[in-house]
Length: 242
Image (cartoon, rainbow, N blue to C red; front, side, top):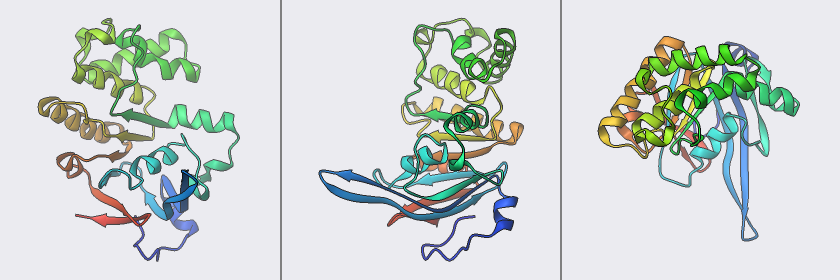
């Protein structure tokens, strides 16, 4: 799935066709105080449908950068990402936004919910953006909120919910359209142990129920060891870890 530090895994058409996501020679750098900092230096990886992957390691090695590019929130300097066999960064902005809305779910450490709206209204947003009617989006949002244990909190403003409940609303919002892949960046970073365990269990249960690919960036090694595979980034390259 992930090539070695020596980058010995060649691009093959078969691997791209067989994978949900294929990453090829991905590079990204930033400028800081006039100096160029190379973060990703030619990453290659293949992710299957339903696979779970944790990206671990210290801050500043490029974990979130990789996740943002994988979710098309940022573009690489060089390299390609294939999604269902198509090179997504060749899409125009409108098609790329449509793929991001319908096929990719995001959960972050900070939930980024709209405070003036209810749990139901927050979870409806991706459906409304995708063109569902209000009734359709509401039904989909209610179903997933019930699934994550918020049946009695549907109409509560999110500011009235606990931190663990707010993160479950964010998870429901990410999954309301049943995306092919869920990208989670430190999803339990602001939660206590009990709520962290609840979110861990939900992520794994929903991965199984929905058949979605799950990629988690985390410092939480307990969560990382729930995942089928773990990788880190060393000198800008992906390396398998225990």
